[in-house]
Length: 60
Image (cartoon, rainbow, N blue to C red):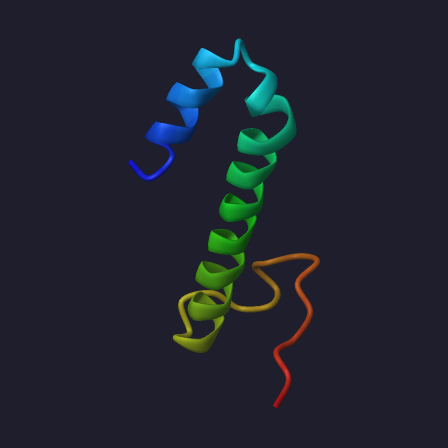
């Protein structure tokens, strides 16, 4: 819901705001959310490093 206002502004600017600001902002937010959830899953034992290829081990 927090992106709803940004999407409305994107429509008002005929997509220009989306290309240069809204889309990169949304993608960066999704990447950070994935990183947070991945770290939490590793800490809580929900997933292992073998199940998440390409993930570096957490610093001890």
